[in-house]
Image 1 (cartoon, rainbow, N blue to C red):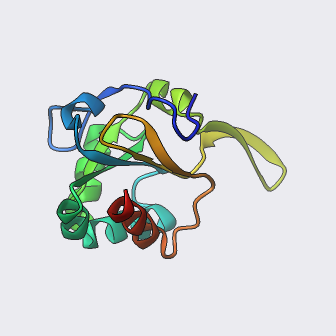
Image 2: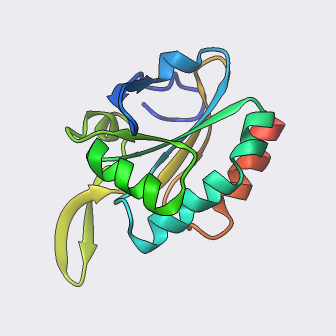
Length: 153
C-alpha cells in the first residue's frame, strides 16, 4: 500500500549515469520520489527542470529527489544532457516499482485506452514511511510545493 503512513515500497533500479539507486541508499534522509510519464516531453521536462532548479534547496532540507519513469537509462542520460538536469533519474523499464506505488494505470486519451504512468509524487520520511502523496500532479508550482512539505517534515 502507498497510503500516507505506510512503509514506502523498496526499490533498486538502474539510474542515469550508470549504477543503481535504491531507497535503502537514503536511509535516515527524506526522499522525494516523483513518477513521470516520459523523458523529454513538455510537462515532464518542465517538472524535471523545476526539481533541478530547486535541488540545492532540497539538499539543504536533507532531501534527495529521484525522478522515475519507464524510460531506459540511455534515454535518461540523453534527457539529462539536453536539459542540464541535476537530479537522479531511475529507470523502471519492467514497471514493477510503478505498479507497487500504484501509478501504472489505465489512461484514456481521445477515446483510446492504454496503460501509462499517472504523474504522482511521494515524500518519504527519514523513517522510510510515506509522509505525503500528490496524485495526478499538475506540473506548475509542484516542485516548490513539495519543497515546502519537505522543509516542514
